[in-house]
Amino acid sequence: MDAPILLFILLAGLSAGLLAYVFLFNRIADERNAGKRLETVKAAETTRAAIKATRDRQQEVAKRRKSVQDSLKDLDEKQKIRDANTKKPPLKIQIRQAGMTVSMQQFYLYSALTGVVLAVAAFVLGAPLYVVPGALLVGGLGIPRWYVSFKRKRRVKAFLNEFPNALDVIVRAVKSGLPLNDGIRLIAHEAREPVKGEFRRIVEAQQLGMSIPEASMRMGETMPCPEANFFGIVIQIQSQAGGNLSEALGNLSRVIRDRKRMKAKVQALSMEAKASAAIIGALPFIVAFLVYISSPAYIMPLFTTSTGNLILLVSGVWMSIGLLVMRNMINFEV
Image (cartoon, rainbow, N blue to C red; front, top):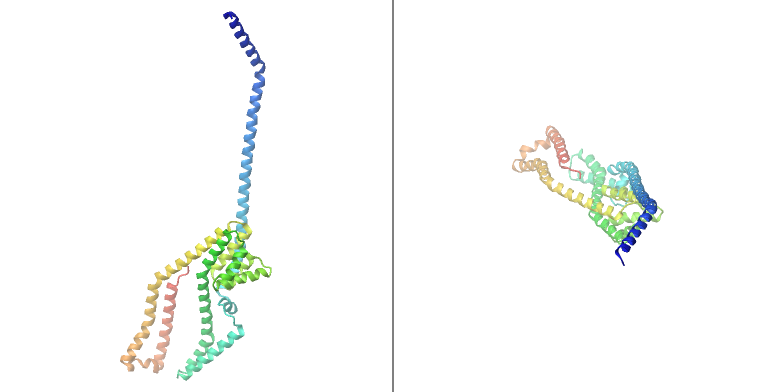
């Protein structure tokens, strides 16, 4: 084929292509613009959906925060009422918190018997007559109430020693897929006293129709310590606001152990001051005993004369004030 013919064919094809491009240019441009607008609309919809999801998430967080704040406010008001009964509860509640099963009539009867026995013992031992009414008051009012307070503190101490382990068992039960009810029942059957008895009360209250949060909040009535109230607050907030129960109870267990460790550290640091206070309080009695052994006639006027008795009384009052001041200085609350 000749070169002019080839050149003619190429020019003809190029002309046809240019003509087609000219006629189809507007359509191509429109399709391109439509594609850009479609991409813009899709991007706008994606951005709008992301903004809406973010707004919904923020509203959910705000709603949950408000729910937690309302729950905390309600619990704080209830806690103030419980604290009033926890710090200075009536004698009947103190006996219940001590784990004693005696009734009020039996307690008053035992108190009267203790006072009478102590007064008779003081009279038989030859104590002055003014000491006998004092012994009656101490035996009737002092010793029984001190025994209740002693049992109460010892029960709280035993509860705090076992309570973190019980919380760890509940955490592991919840993580393994068991409901909270089964974890509480497990503690009510397998734990040591008094934790076992406190969780058994929760199970019994639940069987009577009370919810677990309400039953847990009542634990502070029979166990006068902040840790029992913490447990009830955690269960109450989790039931109202949701959240990871196992993580919350695990944090509570760690906090209780940290508080126990801090108490032990404070007690160790204050032992020197307590030893000093014990030595200072016992020093007058030791000196009086040594003086009595070495020269009885020198110290006996304190016990045989009215002036000496007055001096002993005033000295005892001032010594008691000093001991109370030292006790308040070395008694730390954690």
